[in-house]
Amino acid sequence: MRRRDFVARLGGAATLSIALPLAVQAQQRAMPVVGFLGSDSLELSASHLGEFRQGLGETGYIEGRNVAIEYRWADGDDARLPDLAADLVRRKVAVIVASGLRATRAAKAATASIPIVFVFGGDPVALGLVASLARPGGNVTGVTQLDDEVAPKRLEMMHYLLPTATDFALLVDPNDPNNELQTNDMRAAARVLGLNLHILPAASERDFAAVFESAVRLRVAGLIISANTLTVTGGAVNQQLVLLAARHAMPTISFWREFALAGGLMSYGVGDPDELVRVIGAYTGRILKGEKPADLPVQRATRIELALNLKTAKLLGLTFPLPLLGRADKVIE
Image (tube, rainbow, N blue to C red; front, side, top):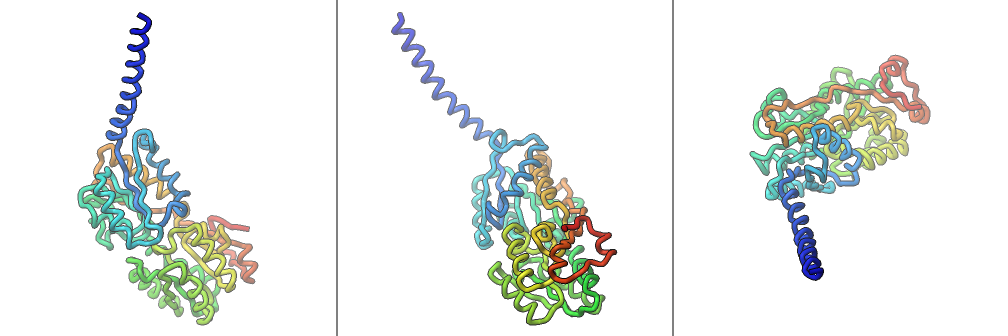
């Protein structure tokens, strides 16, 4: 009798050991999968992923518990994005999150049915990604910084800091889809101010040093860093630009607050980029719950901040005018 009990229990345990993994597998199959497509690398994006997961969490989705995320990184090689996007489509993910304009374009080219949630700086209407900000239509929505409206202000602030200077330079990415529009806007602003604006291209991070050398050779008074697919990665890129600006004693303004925090002279742009990432996390969760991208308006970053670094100004022998200090949202001493 005892032997029969033992065998029965052993059989029950074996059945349980098989049944549990099968149940887990069934649960995993039922779990929605989000595809995350990024132009840069995991290392450069790691700090923002926590904010994305927080946005997801606000709608009730926790990675690994009731949603899975498939990450695809181009590691700075945007030519890989179409293949990475196609792979996510083949895997039939429920939503594709696209970080950056090129990732968004690759995702849109890969599918007209899977919802796409983007985050980048630029006008998605002018770029043909959505019908309008209020009613995007189609399968694409997200968050934009609309930096084209803010960019000319950086030249104005540089001119205000250096009122007697006539020549400034603009660092651009010639491969960025927004490059022509942003460059034209900046040239128009320079004409209004009576300034000469030199356009200095950087197609990769390896070109940054040459840009600063050209700026010195041209005797420009200051350099404006445009928001483009090359410079938006932040992190190591910010550090490299800060170091080059210091090495060449070049007054420089960027769009990232982190640039000024890292030692750059000034920044003027989106105050909290992590807030944008939280929004796309929340949008992703809302789509998983059944809402349509066509009905979710494209959100715009509305909080623009000015950050000034007093220590860097002192090293450059500059003094911020009191009105500029009064406008600053963050003063780094």
